[in-house]
Length: 99
Image 1 (cartoon, helix red, strand yellow):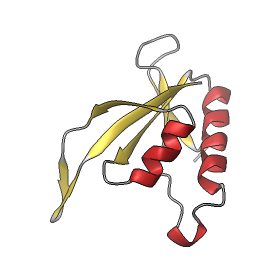
Image 2 (tube, rainbow, N blue to C red; image 1 turned 90 degrees about the vertical axis):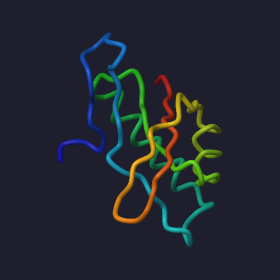
Image 3 (cartoon, rainbow, N blue to C red; image 1 turned 60 degrees about the vertical axis):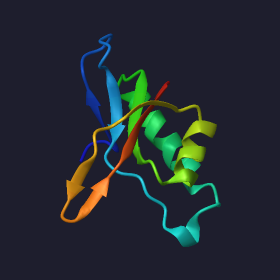
């Protein structure tokens, strides 16, 4: 992998954004600034590859992550359609931030 993010769209398009592959911090390491630092690296990399926006998905039930993303300037754009993997339903918010 060349980057921690993938870029979608063409420069200037409404769909020009970068998306991290996956972000997670183990519970025992939360509250130490690791999530904030990870997002800083992601945003820096997105800028480096020419994106003007970072988009991500977060489980609706993950109040801690939503609070972090909002504190860092991300807005909820929409509720994504529910999808199912095996026997588990996933409900997500699509969030994004202009960088």
